[in-house]
Length: 144
Ligand code: HEC
Image (cartoon, rainbow, N blue to C red; front, side, top):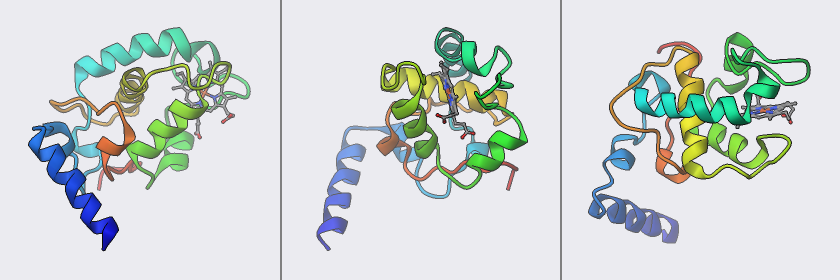
């Protein structure tokens, strides 16, 4: 009951703040619904080049122990998780040589780039810069 009430307070605060992104990304959404913008993916490409490419490769195909961030192996690992789960994984553990060094906006930008490279469609709004605002938007390896 307490939990429910505080969730409602948070929800109405977001609506009051006019947080369109948070509202639009509510339950039932998947990465096939356009969860990032093309401009965001372009920013993410630069973040990737500076912080990730040296280990995961220019084409995201992986190098040695650094796994691919595109294709079926990657998508199988992340299928049925959420965009928030992937955000947290990147934010808390990557870059492996300097974990936690990237701010929320850089992390969501690089996540947008990873989505673009995996063939998920762009939409009109950015992937939000923190996992709470992403709600339960799911990563699905194939279009539902
Ligand atoms: C110093 C090398 C290095 C850098 C730099 C690095 N990674 Fe990694 N990454 C790894 C290694 C090695 C693993 C696998 C072992 C592990 O998970 O710790 C990994 C795992 C991952 C995974 C999990 C993949 C899966 O299928 O489960 C993701 C996602 C990821 N990295 C994203 C990133 C992103 C995004 C960046 C840049 C912000 C980045 N990494 C920078 C080495 C690196």
